[in-house]
Image 1 (cartoon, rainbow, N blue to C red):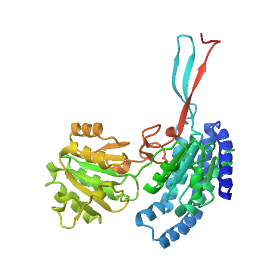
Image 2: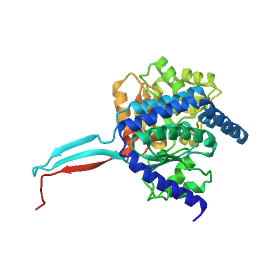
Image 3: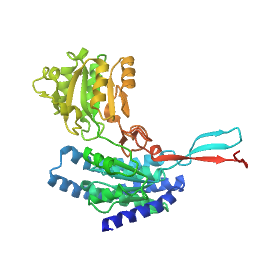
Length: 419
């Protein structure tokens, strides 16, 4: 057994033991751990910022794209957001022990379905150090232990954040091993982690296509799929132009590096003359590169020709693909052909068109007259999220506290035996 294997097995053993304790912990204990960790993040904001400066300098030296550096960067506002996020999680109802259903059989057996932790959750992610706080906090509230494997880009930042989370655990009388960070940057650790069936119950991958494809191909552990966010905004023929302008700019450019950023704009041919030139002009004026079909190229000479590959690309940058379509049906067809089943929006004053869009598009999150950038567990009132699941089994959409649980059946009898 290699040194890395020994390290990973030790993490797994510690996580299993710690989970047995946190799975039985009181709501008060878990909430204390979260609130103390939040206070510690604020106290250690200078230490965290200094660690992030090291990561940012390395990212600059590596020539990381601007969108990736934006994901990586921590300032005072983002550190405060992490702390506030932990406090939001503490305020959520404790899901563990909740009775989901209860019924009595004719033979008198009383049967209840009760929510329980999933167990040990392995989270593999890239670049974004705030995932460290969100994932650790959510797993803790749901009575799970977490093994975090962040990207090498955020190594120092994530380490400083984990220290704060573990400080909260110890203060609440819980094992520090409830939240652990893989202490080696070697990529071999990921391969070992994906085979730790006796230690880890669920894997949550969060990152680019290459990471997700590797996890899907290699994991022997069930996983929540978080595929790329090829998100669409469709501007219908009944869309209010001013509303569409606000939504499109926000959906694409508020933060280009997040998975909920719109990557493709679809515009109904009925408003191609009135709406398309304005929307394209807004995007170009805001510094966004526009790649369009022939109809879109015709409205502005600065529009570049779109390729087939563009419809399947998650840019995570100030680039957008634009297409004119023949109504809501054609928009649905395009999304179903090219989308990643993440998040899609329709802008329209026609409720029937919105209903058709909602019925026809098979994505985790659908929005009517709102920006795709609302695809976020915090915005959904879930406190935070580990990510957006694009799969259909167990969890779909934002993965928050409730999605990090399973259930068991508790059957109460009075001496019944089966004939």
